[in-house]
Image (cartoon, rainbow, N blue to C red):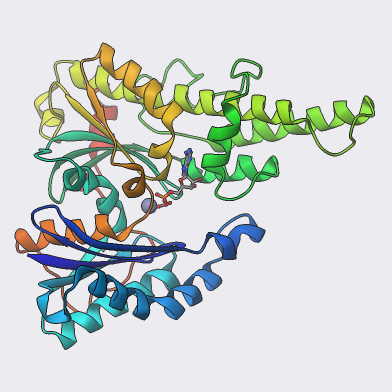
Length: 376
Ligand code: KG4
Ligand code: ZN
């Protein structure tokens, strides 16, 4: 079985053909980073137009590289949300058109499900269940992945996404977009203990059963520190608007360490909660005891500092940590085509009247938080 997948939810136009033996037969990815760089973030209108301009030729290129024709494809799928709606529509319409012209199934893919299941594409025999830390430009969530279509959201950010925070801090430091890799690089020469940034939600000791995140206060704390440094350097007459490279590196390292501490604190809450003797109503929500596998997915998963800190923490709990290869961590169509393969194999296909969704949550039990609050 071969599925052609399209990803256009943000600033990458990507096409992939993947089969049910986990072969990525072809994979094309065209990033729009250069178009958005000068704005310090993705401009939705520019993104949608750029997808339109290039998508047809990328689809043909993917087929050519795979040495296949449209008739060899068993299903067409595309990210149908969540994402920038204009961009999502471009990919979705292409997949629907191809499916209807070639009389093959159309599968609507949730972008987050792509990140959640990539590990089953990249790793042989990677079985359910597993805990998922999804950290990308638009999201920061902890989920239990119990099976295809069986996801339980345990916690999420109540304000900024994690990748977004990296990008904003980078912008404050005049680093280029996307900010994550820039911060990780500069942090290597920085002192992570120089600045003590507050950890919203976590500094409150009554938050033992909270699995949510908050990053906007951290961002504000970083901004204040930068302003203070700029003021100091103006007083010292060194350079009145810029801070030194070492200051920047120390900010990056301290910010990255704070983020890593926050992630670990929330994961620790989940594990402690899960290891208790759970009331039946809670275990029915899909908690598995004990959790043995943790997958980190999404663009921020490519951060080696964060990954290795989490790995050290996880060892203490006998949890193995996995992350897809770098190329499959950030947005790509192979992960979308793979969910297409999984869903098509399970007979889950969609109608051509499927509507694109700017917001599309990936969980089944909205009442979980209520249940947790009731018991603890
Ligand atoms: O998953 P992704 O490609 O797109 C979304 O679905 O949002 O994630 C992109 C995000 C950007 O915000 C980028 O700054 C961040 O992932 N990112 C990183 C790193 N590489 C990419 N953040 C921290 N450290 C990195 N090495
Ligand atoms: Zn993504």
